[in-house]
View 1 (cartoon, rainbow, N blue to C red):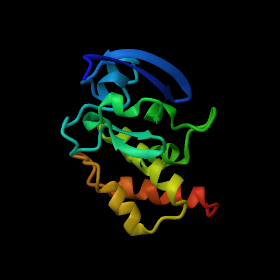
View 2: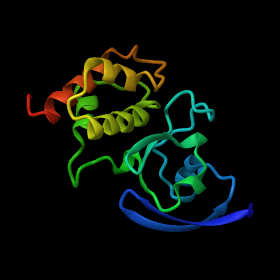
View 3: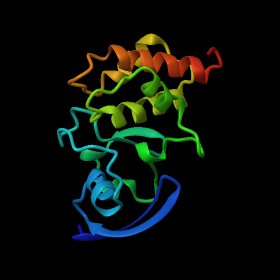
View 4: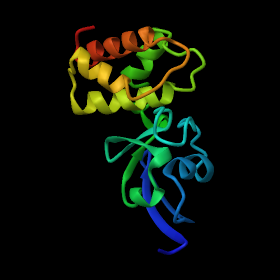
Length: 160
C-alpha cells in the first residue's frame, strides 16, 4: 500500500483534492487538513459518536474511518448540515430545547439525527432512541436531546 494517496472528496458541497498519508483517519483529515473542527475527537475507537459525519448520506464514525475509504464520496459534517442560509430543523430544535450543555457531543447527535430523518422522515420513538443510543453524552441525561429529536420530527413532518 502506498504511504500517501491523492483523494478527491466533496466536503459540504466543496470539491477537495488532497494528498494525505494512507493511514490518516477521516476525522483527522477533516479537522487538521480542512479546518472543520465541528466533528470532535472523543474516544478514537468508535464508541462515543462525537465524530459522526455523513459519507454519501450514511452516518459514519470518522475516527475509525480511513480517509481513503471516502475517496470520491460526498461528506457532510455538522458545518454542512444547514439548509442554504437556514439552520436545519434538528439544529433549531437543539437550540430551542437547550439540548446541549458542554456541547462536545452535540455535532455527532445532530449529524446522526439528520441521517435518520433523511432516511426515515417520520421515525418511531424507538428508531430515534436507537439513533441517539449510538452517541454518548456525559452531561445532559438525554432528556432534552430526545425532546429536540421529537421537535425536529414534528417540524419535518409539518405537524408543528
